[in-house]
Each structure stands twice: as C-alpha cells, then as structure tokens.
Image (cartoon, rainbow, N blue to C red; front, side, top):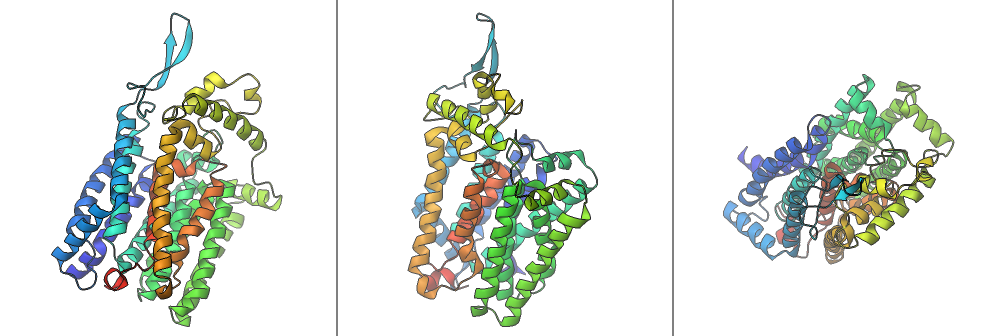
Length: 464
C-alpha cells in the first residue's frame, strides 16, 4: 500500500487539482473556486517535495534531493514564479470599470489603482491568479516529480474526473437545467466555452488508456470507459461546432496512432482492445448527437455539419468589427493591454450605431482569442504565454531528438503536436483557452507530453 501511495498518490492529487475548476464552475463563485485551488495547490506543493516518484531504485530522501535540485536548476521554475507574481499584481491592481464624470456629464473608464502596472476589472483576476498558482504546482510536479507510470496515472485521473463531471453536466442538461442549457447555447457575446476542457481531457484519456494497457492495468478500463464517454459528451454539448470538429478529429488521430503504432509496444490483443474501446465511445457519442435528443441543439449542429455551415449567420462580419476594435484598444495600451476583463467596457466607447447592426449588444469578448489576448494583456502579457509555450516546446523537441533512438511510439509522445493543431486554429474563432479551468488542463497536457519522451539520461529518468 505504501508503495502505491508513493508512486501514484501525487499523480492523483495533481489530477484532482487539474480537474477541480471544471467540477466547480457551474455552482461556485470565482472567489470560492480560487480558495479551493489555493489550498489544493499548497498541499500539492508539499507533496511534490516530500513524496515524489522514486526512479532508478531511489530511497525517499534521494528522490526529494533530486526534485529540489532539478527544480532549482530549471529556468522554467523561475519563469513560473514570475507568472505567479504578474498574476498577483494584476489581481491586486483591480478596479478598472465605468465611472460617471460629473464635470463632462459623461461616462468614462476608471483607471486601475496603479496605472502603469498590470491591471484588471475588480474581482475578475482572482481566479486567474489562483489558477496560475495551481498551474505552477502542476507543471513543476509533472516536470520534476512524476515518473513514467505516474504520468499514465495522471492522464487516467484527469480523464476520469473530468469525464464524470461531463456525464453529470450532460444529465443536468438533458433534464432542462437552466445553467447547463445556457452553457450549451454558446452565445457569441461570450465566446469562451468550457467544452474545450473536455476535449483536452479526452485526448489525455486516449494517452492514458494505451498507457494503462501497456502497464497491464486492465481493470482501469472499466473506470476509464465512462470517463471517456463523459469527456465526449462534454465536448459535444458545451463547445462551439468548430471546436467540436477539431477535437473529434484530434481524438481520431490519437486513436489511430494508438491502434497502429502500439503493436510495437503492446500485444496485438491489447492494441485491438484499445481501438475497439474508442470505436465504442465514438459510436455512443454519435448516437447521442443524432438520435437521443431530436430537435435539440445537438441535432441543429448535426444539420449544420450536413449543410457545411460551421459558423453562425453574421459571425464573420461581427468578428471583423470586434477585431478592429481590439486592434484600437491594443494601440492605445500596447505593453500591458487595457486590463483583464476590460474589453466589455472598451467596446462601449468604440462602438457606433452601425456596430450594433452586426455585433450583439452586451458583447463581452472578441470572437478571436488571439486579439483578445493582446488587447487585454498587451505585449508583455502575450509574451508570458509565448515564452511558457516556448519552454515546453523546447523540452519536447530536445528530449525527442536526444532520445529518438530509444523512443517507443506511445500516443502520449504525439499529444503535444496534435493538441496544438487542434487548439491554435480554433482560437481564431473563440477565447476558450483563456478560461482558467481550460488553460490549466491545456498547460498540463502540453507539459505532460513534453516530458514523456526519454530524457538524455535515460537509465536514471525512466527506470522505476
């Protein structure tokens, strides 16, 4: 029992931390979710140091020394601390909002407390700050404290927890719950859809399923089957049509990679069972989409696919107008942006009567995630995103090249490029990746794949 706790309890806790916001967001305020994340992150940080995976026959104290040594020598650790500091300043420096100027008898935009520092709309940045702390704990744990088997356990844990949430959300949606019907509506004025998080968890579940078969964790399939079905249901119900199609294609690619290439790792029956497993999930999802809810939003999506009408009417015209406004906001605040959550106020000053002929009143965000990023966060905020992605990409490529001769073509090795090919194009039409709950699971999946290839010091890094 102690051995199981030592090998997999940290992975399970990090998986719980990753999935927690997706469980809680329909029911809890941002402040309450942030509190949960901070407490789970504190416990996770202690666990990363005190009970990391033991590799190469290490003793517990050797594993702790290794983790501390690698974390303190890794530039990525200090980068993530800078991200947390930046997010903390943005949270504290709240207060951006509308105020009435009595002298000019007009509404104006109130500045943040510190005008030349990162800012936010009051109350908006508390969850992104907590998510940055949680993300730091998760990423440093994945990079430094999880062995090969623990990484598979992490994939399975995230897919199961997110999938079970998806099943419950689908049940509430089918019973007419107003909260989940509103999530299904995917209004364009708030183009940040939680369904992308379920799609990312589905890809993690694909990698975890093949890894579980490789480790002969055959009973895990019984737990993972409803998890994958729930991830698929959450993707179908709560994402935009383009996002749904992109992640269904990515899941098919992961299934094909696993079925074809895992013959080199698994016995034929194991890879066949994995392939059959995914076929069952896709068939069940197709039945749900086409037959189970006739006349519903899913049926309308199916009809849109038949007519090759993947975007709502007038979407591109609205998107062009909003992107022009975001460009103006960026030019006025090029370095730090206008502040997190402030575009909904900026649009009121930039809009004209002609604007509302194509833009929905009450628009909150740009229907282009890249313009949303640079308008609200500026060059410096966008640089944090690009530098972090660059760190993970460098890890992925360098490990892949260094360990190419010893590489076993597991699906987890392909997750990094497959995930980017799904997310990057979709973000030209929505802002889902900037949701705190989605960004956490996205960053974790990228880091997990980046560290899955054999390292240069393979005997030390991969033996367990």
